Image (tube, rainbow, N blue to C red):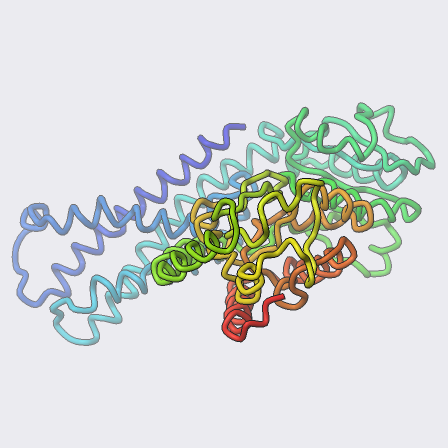
Length: 470
């Protein structure tokens, strides 16, 4: 499968249909809305605004679709869902165009405003959805005929796993799964899949298997006796770009205790998206805009703090330390130095309230979070976000994971300057406290949204202004 080619098809279709819709709408405006226009089509073709709209506006539409997340999971589209998504995005886009480009037009009557809105909405939606419908129908047809498929690993090897495998393989219209093999959960009652699929190993090898076999979908099909392995498996592959589905046991289906995602196979898709695509874009825009404004406004504070750090004790003004960020990638976190030089010459140590390594000015900085100001540059760079779990060093992460394996879930998002754990708990003085603080960050992970980020930022500002940092 060539994902880039598939994306290019949708991009080209969206661009051409947007251009066509605007061209027809431009003709409509000139002939039926403009009270003084009484010329031929050739006059419209000489109008620069016509070409500006036909060539430029489609880029705005493509950008809006990208923000809405339309070009993600490009081979897994539903024509029914596409109908609603296209209509909603079209309505938003037409509203933007209407209020930015059309509201000050010369018109025959105010009734023309409503007519123009409906005409542009109808034209754009009809052309766009028709093109998408054709591409998606052709793609789905190829998937059903097994021309296109997704490399799939089945986790489990007992009765439930065999039933799911046979259900999918025997369907006249394939859902797109191309099984490359199976892995076991370590609790094997009967290995019923060995005659049908290659055994790729244990679930602890999943990351390697996913990378080696270019796996796109993982189906967990356990018996009740294996249910305890589900959580560690999901934690293991949480940061992998795969679709995760769980097959409930037959008793759950008969009792009506589950709702399945397909009328063909009883599979429950586990959502790995913490935020809708458009909110991720808005979050990044907030990071850039707020950080840039903060750097400009706080420039005098930045200079004053740097001078005070230099005068407080010998050593560099800025302190750089390696931390672990998104998907386990390491980056350099920058802060104003709040401790004496060589404070960790004997190895990694967490600070405490009465820590003698902290300078007098360092205590003031920590109280008002002034030492965190340089991190706005790290946010602009993209290694951090304004709001996200507190980044830690690998030395402490290893200790935390031993007692709290699902701590790794925090690496699904960028670390932040502030977090729900930082607001509710503050700085940690030992591993026990780091675990307690992480519990609040895991709650944030389950409730991620732009509204939650704004709430945390407001709380953080209140803590800074009141000097309650700890």
